[in-house]
Every structure is written in C-alpha cells, then in structure tokens.
Length: 302
Ligand SMILES: [Fe+2]
Ligand SMILES: [Fe+2]
Image (tube, rainbow, N blue to C red):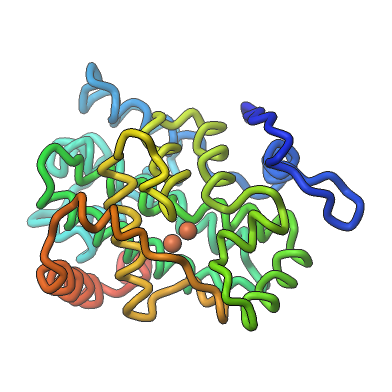
C-alpha cells in the first residue's frame, strides 16, 4: 500500500499519550482486511480516457472471485439486466465498462465491510445501507446534472464514508467514546472528530482513496463531502455526494451512530439548483427501486 503523507501538524493529536495522525491510521489500516486491488485497478482503467472494454474485462478477470461476484450481480435483479451474461467480457459489452466498474466496486466493498466490521459496534449493514443508498441517489442526481459522470458519482458515494470504517477499526475505543460524547453534544460529528483526532473521517477517507491510487476526483469529493463549500473551485461531485448524504440521512438511513449529526451545506444545494420537492421525489423513486431488489446486493444474486 502506498502511504500518503499529509504531514500537517494540525492533522494529529495525542490520544491517550499516543500521537495519532492520518499516516499512522493508514499504516494501521493496511494490517486490516484489504479490498481487492483489482477493484481499484478496474476503476483506474475504466476512468482512463484511453481505456477499452477489453482492458477492463482483462483486468477484472485477474481476480476470479471478484469476477464471479460481479457476474452474480450483473445477473441479479439489482442491475436490471435484460439477458443473462456468462462472462466478464460479456458483462462489459452488455453493461458497458463504466457500469461494470461500479459493479466491481460493489462486489469488492460489500464483503469487505462485512469482514472488517464483523462483531464490531458499528453495524456493517447500517453503514452499507447508508453508502449504497447514497450511491444510487448520487447517480440519480448526477444523471440530471450537466457534465456530471453518473457512474463516478455512484462509486465515490459508495466510498464516501470509508474513513469512518478505518477510524473505527484503528481507534475503536476512542471512537466509541466520541459516539457517547455525540449523544449530548450540539457539535456536528465531523467537528467532534476533528477536535478529538485533529482530522475527520472525510480527510481520512480521502487519504485512503489516494493510497489506493484512485483518480484525484475521488479523494477530493470524499474529502469535502461534509463541507463542499470549503472548496475554492466548486466540485459538482462533492456537491452531489453532500446533498445525497444529507437527504438520505433525512430518511433515517444513517450508519446508526446515535446522536451524531452533520451540518447541511446550503451552498451545495444552491449550486445544484434543484427544487427541494424534485429532489425529495427523486430520492423516493430511487429508494423505492432499490427496495424492490433488496438492500443486500448478494442476497438474491447468491
Ligand atoms: Fe461522512
Ligand atoms: Fe455519509
């Protein structure tokens, strides 16, 4: 794993006498169950302007178990395929390389989350439901925004809270303390993280995305998903993920951290320019479609 050195002194704190910074967390996170590297390679290749369907299929084929899960997904009700596909090559042709990229990320991250968080206080199914709901909704929003890449929005939204997982896995006791603090605090949860650790899950998630060599657009949108207006030049994908996160939470679909809340960045809503009723309608529609095929993408595909 490539280490990312952010190196800013303010991005660290002493927690129980031990210096904690993003670099240390990423080092520690590398000892944890890792996501299949091939899934990231598929993202890098599918997002490359000169890539081809064949390249994506060949890359995916390097990991047989990931390929098998992608095929199961491609043939499940989840992606509404009109005909059965029998190989990764066929899947890329029928679904397109960008959708196959999203599928491989779903196929990689769902089991990873379950293995990584098994028996932990942070419930993988709640976090998964929050992330996959944000992913579908972000994709739906992006389809209605000029020049926004819907599959990219899906993938970034699926990963947007990956920093929470890393934080939880590496600083479980401190994180649990923070959750208790959040119950009586009027401070937003990412601010509590910054006060406690010197950085928040969004920054950590961005550093992880960088360590996986994902395109910069991923780390930028992840880093700013709770504060997109902090960016000097607005980033449509960061705006979309923020809006999706806030509205999905508004429907009670959260990672289940009792008492934790996040601030709404009105600027992101204004920049996207949707009527609020239209957004709510789009969300209802997205969640209904999603409910029909189950929130567990492997339940029906198995
Ligand atoms: Fe978040
Ligand atoms: Fe979130």
